[in-house]
Image (tube, rainbow, N blue to C red; front, top):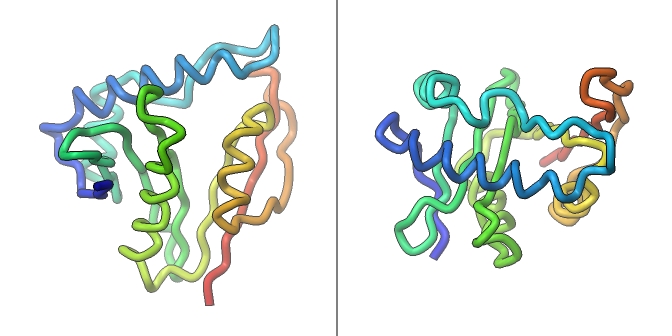
Length: 158
C-alpha cells in the first residue's frame, strides 16, 4: 500500500538518502557533457529540514517504509507547484509515483492549478507527467551552467 504522510525532521536522513539515490541514478539518462548535478538541496539535510518545516513536504511510504518524497509549494489562489517528486530507484516502475501524485490531488481538492518543471533531457519524467494529464506550456532557455533547458507543465482542475 502506498501512502503519503507529512514528513517530519525525524525523516530527513531517509528522505535525503532516497533523493541522493534517485538523482544519482537519473544521471544515466543525461546526455554526454551535461552537468551531473542534482536539483538544489537534494543532498542537504539542512535544505530538506528547512522545507519540511516550511512547506507541504510529504514522505512516500510503501509497506510503511520511506521510498520517496514529494515537495509542494503553495502559490496562492488555489495553485500549487510540485517542487519535486522522487522515488528510490529500487522502487521505480511499480506505479508508486502515479499513486503518490493521485493521492496528492485527493489531499488538495481545492487546488485548481498544478504546475511543475522538469529538465528537457528527462523524457521519462515528461511522459509520466503527461500521463497524469499535465500539459507542456513552454520550454525555458538553456542554463549555460547545466547545459540543458527546462520544460514547464500545468494541470488545470475544474
